[in-house]
Image (cartoon, rainbow, N blue to C red; front, side):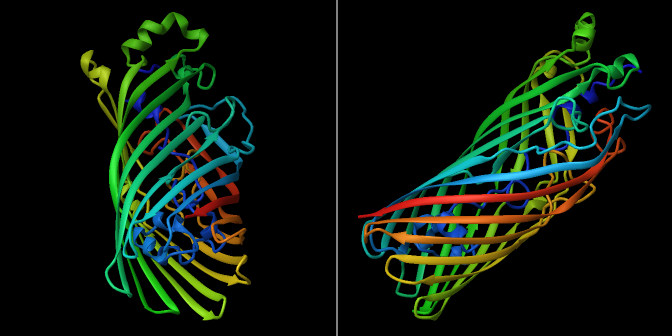
Length: 444
């Protein structure tokens, strides 16, 4: 068998996905507020105990009378293992490989920073720095999934100035501008053994690095009809990300004499461009005071992951060199998702606050389109947290969450779009996630 089809090159670049597993649906990161995490983010769109709720709804800033600075970090510790793995090329078989991958993830810190300036009782200005999407996975070079994924590292950083205005005692509105920086590094093995008729015997590697600046916005409104009930509606816009960067190939030593031939077929360093639609999210939160010091929270969020239908890749240098290869498309066909959470908050004293919460979080993909880069599945959250006020100006919050992730099957075949050179891959992912969070806030 020879590698004569140039369409194989782009299929090998991004094997089956754009980003790794994260702690919410798809590759979304909900961990933006250590205080709200104690309630599993229930009611956060209606406002919480600190200004970190501005990430979900900028209108919540009017609930705070004083200026405030808050910094926090969430350490996300996922455990993701593939078991009963099987892989084969379109024809023949690969050499034996471990059927289990071991844990493909390592702990990752997610910092965040918030500031609010209270210009008047009605007008508030805010600023936030967050990582709303991302995480990382990495598999061994001999892994059974290596032709579909080796390393996946996605970093997304948002910078968001915001403003909130209280119209009257019941209604407030808010808006934020979002400047988003995206950086991605993706690698997978390339089966150059196909060129000699010996699949799996001559592995190289392709590495993609790229980045982009893109822009979006947030809108929000809160309604407080009485002192016991507060409601909030927040909207985070979709953002189109246009990654530009470089793709580089590593040719195995056994095929070094074929470098010029492989380069003529498109296996050469290139400039690349990739386009991805990151989803919008609409969230609705409720906070209801049951009795003195005790309140009940509910959160419902809808994320339109269905806009992530495909991943388009373009090799820019191939156009300049006159090669026929230009575009490649990987099907994703994700589903819209719902997140539903309920929580309780007990303010035991002026100093101590205790929180509990649970949530159901839908996965965005399914058995047909699940990949080793994004082994997404339905999740169940259990959270707890506490807050302590050292004084009226200084406070801290701690939270812990365990996420139970449903098992997810892989069923990738060479008949699928882009998988002709990656091969068949099946198995079952077993995952769970622990999250430890802490924040400090200072009011002035």
